[in-house]
Image (cartoon, rainbow, N blue to C red):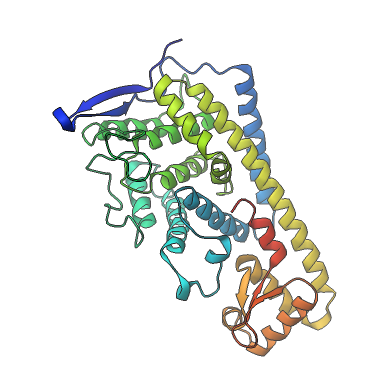
Length: 383
């Protein structure tokens, strides 16, 4: 079987001449030939994802857990692009005072995710929605001068620090070729599921490959491309909540991830990319299931402990609920958020420290900061 994934086009002339890659429209031609191993991985990926989605629907306060997962995904997706921040940085209760550019990039990813999911109620997953999401992602961060919310009108390239068109590892479609590629991708995302229908997870794999190959923005392509996977699966009803994120797996396997995308462009071998993607879905689903189980067990144990504490149990339960969304706290801000007195919260926090639920991490008398360490330890994995 011979297949090309696109063509190399010459641009400019003379000393300025360079070649850019223009991907063929999806689906691949000839059609994908998925072997028994890959088909088994696809079935497994669907089962693991269905188990994860069903499990998440049965967890109390699942929206809080999803909020934490989105923040973790934002962090790891940004770390792949070189952002220097930690989970504790983005959960800092004084984040408004201590925000730096790296933290802002992560916060913007959270905002962009929330924006895009809400926008899916109004729009199909289309180029307009992708552009508007990109505008939210790039607001007020490095690259904000690089036309946020607009597809590029100049040539970009992928390579190491200081690389040029002459030394680039990969050069995406030229500005002249890119509109057709984006139109074809939009059509594939929204095509009718008729004869020759491709499995939805396989389509997600192809869509992510194609978006990264087109690289339609001057900055933020990786983050938008990974978010596109989640948005597509939600729109197609595969997931009810944004609980699956592949950035942890892709961060661990970053070199292989880039190499496999390159191999499709050079050899037309989409099948090896689909296998890699399905492995990512399986392992990421398993990791998310493990995390949910651990958090549910911790939650059950701590609420049982609190319920045995007599008349202060109600106050501490309120604080524990607040900790699930804000696992690093400062007493004054917590009191304001819960509309309780400073002394009430301070007393409850001290009791939670004595019980081993909370630990003081900074401060002496004033501005003390406390962490829900067992909860954070579960969430920090991979960050």
